[in-house]
Length: 43
Image (cartoon, rainbow, N blue to C red; front, side):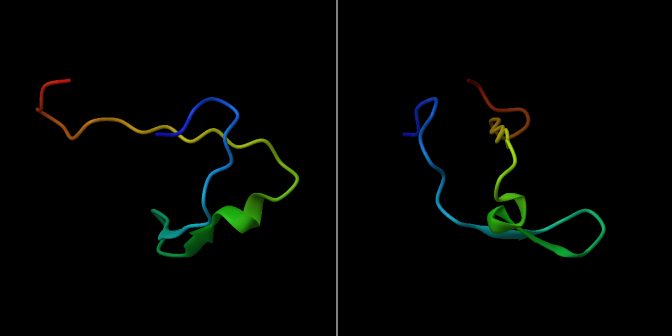
């Protein structure tokens, strides 16, 4: 489990506009990663 201040592993995903986005695209910038539980599930 990640803790505040931990480095995230490199990843790539498709953005809402259809273009791929990589964590490397944000080198030198502050990034907030937000994870949430699947909709309509406890927790």
